[in-house]
Image 1 (tube, one colour):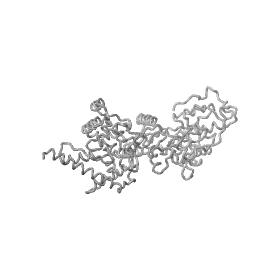
Image 2: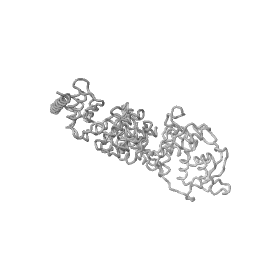
Image 3: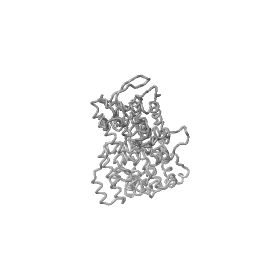
Image 4: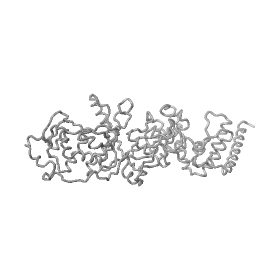
Length: 551
């Protein structure tokens, strides 16, 4: 008998034995079960988005960077590439590829230069979900489970399990994050060449990870492209164009990390289950109130300001932008300069208490206007003894060291004149001003006796976040809004009814609907009787300061 005849006979025997084994295996698979718990979608990396869907942070789970994606959100090109690379007859077999198995057996008997594997996508899905036990029966058990899985799930369901569990190096799992990590685009937007490169990585991630092994990744990509062409997935022209293309691989695995201190608070909300249900989508995607563009602009402005003022001793800065009507936090810069090498660089300076300087003056002026004063009201910008903290006597002075005498309220406020501000406190009363600050939800306001009139010059500790919240009252008829880290429609649609859980956005905020105090709408009525009385008319206009004073 010739060698060719013997080989043909051997091939027939191998085919017959394989067919018989698979038939028995198919029957036996009815007695083997697939653990459905292993098919449950694993937790995604937590993704925090801004109000327009821009990623602010992506946090790994158990050291793995993954995000499950529906098959409908994966490029058909990528699905074709994966099938061509791993299992060309995936749509036709029942979990085990008879022809591939026979071919693999034949290659084992007759050595060839290149050996092809026999594991189908279904079998590989079993490995990815159940692991592969060691021992003589590991392969038969894998086959039986693959046959059982085909009866349990549709082809598309198996493929979705598969593409979301494939390893891509650098702790990346699944096509969604692989597409974003290597090409910076969603899996649905991959072109032919990009899809082939992504499809080629899982066979040997450590050897074909494109950042470190681009040459090997391109060899594997070209192999996948030729398989796609042989399968009819791409045309000759598409093949040639893809083979000639050079991929633009992101130079590093860029995971979003914006608005650090703001997102830290969101992550804490997530851990404590305080994120409103309406602010979540797809389970582990959180939508926030922040505007990433405004955040970036705010950070740039603050960094530039620190650089400009550094010769005067400024080492860091913080800032917040609030929608005064909704309370949504639009920008939140906890530290302009971050990092241990910068003063305050590891802190959330928006929550740090310090003396607020002149920033409390508008609240005293608002009380003046409520009681009948107006922009043209004359104030006395001269030094007088005042009662300060703890009842001590003090004399203040203006920033420029000068007294300006009679000055209009508009000029005094815009020029931030200290002596005129103290005159305002004399008129409205220190106890009333202290009460107003408490109504504005400043957390640590001493008694009027403890702080004295110096409160208007910043004689107490407040945080910038408290101050920003209080300023919203100036445009809301005296109402302080509740600060929100999440879109208002999401946060307020799911407000907890239990008084024990009040945190919708920022810390210990109280109900934004509480009135600060009753309004007295006197406007600019100069005839209204007020504490300023006829004194407004007693000065020659030429002697009155009515323009802003440089400070």
